[in-house]
Image 1 (cartoon, rainbow, N blue to C red):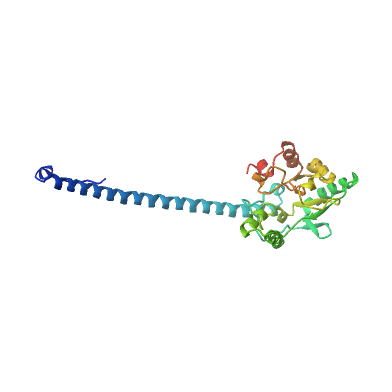
Image 2 (spheres, rainbow, N blue to C red):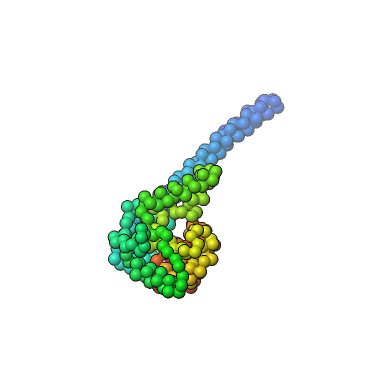
Length: 265
């Protein structure tokens, strides 16, 4: 608080003009002091906001570091829970992770050995129904995912997008290295031999219709369903299937939810 100590008896001896000048001086002094206080408060508020943002950023980084450690330990462990590992931008996977045992499911493509039996059964049963489909992508190392992301981004740059636009568009369809489910060995891309393009029309093929209806029976889910990109962070991919175990797959499919929603993340 600003306090002014003025002898009112002395004011009476001053002329009107002098008194007015004194009053104006007091007002100017008060306003100047008020402005200094206001500026100090604004500076303090700005500093507090900056510290809050830095603390939130640090907390987010620590959360991701814990997720990296937990995901890696869970995937590498023998206990149940590995099937439901959540890998996305908020729950990364260590760049050095590699499944303990990879098994080739088709020429050039490997998956975590723990899902091979169910995956083969699903593909065989689809073939028995007269459908023709094949795995076009499975386990990818961190380096392979980096190459995939960079190639996709370069394609967009070649389409005259700005670097920012290319990055944003790419990250909606190709997971950033370290955040891709393909690195777990639990995800596969399956497409129809009748239509090889990776776009929404893939979902209209008989093969995808059958997979979407029956994949849960084998422990798989359509990982990135339509109209759920605000939750998954990835656009609709009617070819990307993820193993979560038969019980979880049944519940997720029946409820029409994503893995994020199922896990409450």
